[in-house]
Length: 449
Image 1 (spheres, rainbow, N blue to C red):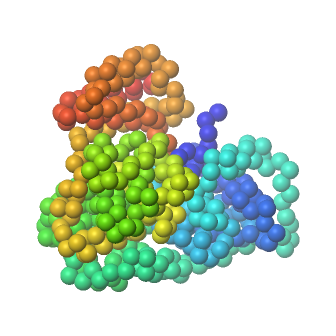
Image 2: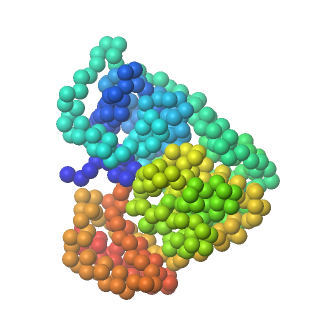
């Protein structure tokens, strides 16, 4: 049986894969596992992104939470990092975000934070999953006054905005910024924060209707933002994803500045100020080879983990590092927040621009981005982990690894959140690696379907 939890909570198409019954059971089992050691009546903060299915799933989840005797505080639409922050600030027992991040609107997801605002360990997720599979055996459900209640606090998202402004304080007067909020959870928080800080702000895709989240906008669709930055003669463009835990940028010339470059810019800036813990940045194996070369040149140690921001975070916590993330724009400033935070990343990047008085295009030259091709192979979800069991695929991968050895690299991995096998090749010739990546992805789809 496939594991219910992926790299970022439980994901699926809302209504068929992620049903209201499953949401309720996750509320029950999650609340029980995360609060069973508490002597008081526990409280869990719940928020969601702008998907139409968010309210449906939130109500089912909170019904489950209350049924095991925990209280729920529903804050409505809020970025994922806001829930992590508010969980810590209000000293509640856990937080839950209902979001499928950058995925299309028909998907949704449920992810938990513990009382310290960190995503759960595999062991805790397995415990929650086991309870669900065992139909909550041995759990005593309270009655009467022991049942939990729901409190609605739509106002406290403003506390997150104030926290962000105080964490990276600066005057953005005179800086023209275009932001793309992906019709998602940042549509209010990021606009308010940047305007409050004085930015000359052009905000696009800030009218979510429940069905348009991530639709040809946000950090997964950057073309409109690139064009808008140039036409507006803005200094920078910022793109968030649906739940605003990741951010990508666009320089004044309309060129993409990805998560690797953002970490390189902020990391070298922090190192120069003596603020980069152990002169180390934690990244994943998907990070561009140019990032490693940047580290060698700048005297920054590059620590690598497997793909997934949770593994980056685990490494950071274990070893006392304070900056890490992914090429996708999921960047963690651990001294400030316990998870990837798109607005926080944007503020740190803007701070470098303000203090150095350098355009983003110049700052981005701190690393050379080597050619990289990434192609997704669509496969059945239950088969995606077993691609190497097919001899035809294994042989094709081996041949590619031999071909690019010494002049690049080949990385194949199943997606943690979608029914995909991701094919990534780095090399010197973009056209060649594009062609080889597509050929291999097509082969994987053909053989595994």
